Length: 426
Ligand SMILES: *Cc1c(COP(=O)(O)O)cnc(C)c1O
Ligand SMILES: [Zn+2]
Image 1 (tube, rainbow, N blue to C red):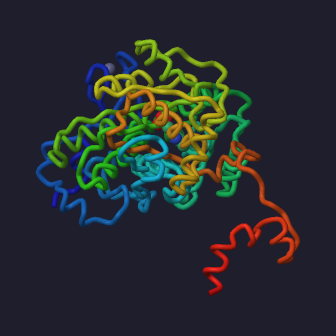
Image 2 (image 1 turned 180 degrees about the vertical axis):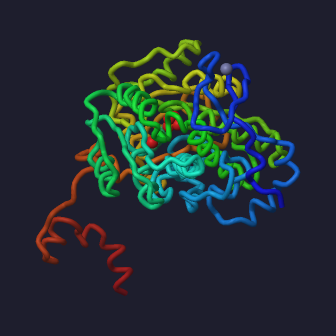
């Protein structure tokens, strides 16, 4: 079999198509367009079959011909292939015929979809010879860079807004990484990272390594198609921060169609944001592709709070091209979304998951996603990392002494359940 190395050919400008060598670069010299990985699809098509994919270990690397590294992956080799859960009770609660949860709350090792992007970025960083890796992060990326760098023996710096949730901060510190809290919003963190990357030549996974990082998100789309039994989902709802994940799920579906791995059936992709930081959603609703920056995001969905989304323009085009649309939701709706996902599907997601469920609910209620349709919700991070968001909003335990009498007095009255009681004691 041909080696995976031969399929990833170049970096290529998304705007003008100019080809670039496969280095740690991310913008076009001519028009500042973002660079993207390009592949030899004809060669891939001649080797990659459903059967070959299915014969491989259940990780995101089973699609490695479509990922931008030269050799074998060396970081995050066990990431991905998270469950696609059929959620009948949640479907009923949301008023849709069929619903699936792509459950990246249990992605390995740091419980968010960011393990996918980091696995690719750090495998590539090693191929390019970086010894220090870093990122600008709203929390989950920092956790994943810290963990994966630790296991790979790379030195890491993670830069985050100083006001992130405790679970996200601790979830980076524990790996012994350098955690730098910046007094400012994510956009300011990101700007500083660009300056550092330029000056010190570190491998910033979402700055100079961004073309590699971004491709990792495609694996979420590949898995959805394979786990549906090699079918495209009719409707996919995706949370948006920079907008990259949404564009890459679109790219994943179209690559599988192009390679003949899945039949071309209609599919629509929908973006979800929090109203307190919804630059992409608001532009789309205005009927524009001009994304106006949000300078001070105000939402509990901190993982999605990017005021100047790098891929906002492309996300809008992906939604439009597929016939999808967008929605955004308030903090109260986010909490309700988190609770619905937990109570009806048994999945505890972070705030971004609440955004996705709440926006899906609105899209179904408005008829944008038809009630007789079938939808996949991309749930991207675990709820244990953002406990502040629901603290005090799910009730509290009822406290009693260790006494049967108190249990019966205060918690459970057998008399009121006498029918059930007597039938078990007969
Ligand atoms: C980063 C992130 C996203 C979306 O990221 P994009 O920048 O749009 O690719 C979604 N959910 C969670 C939990 C995230 O951490
Ligand atoms: Zn260009």
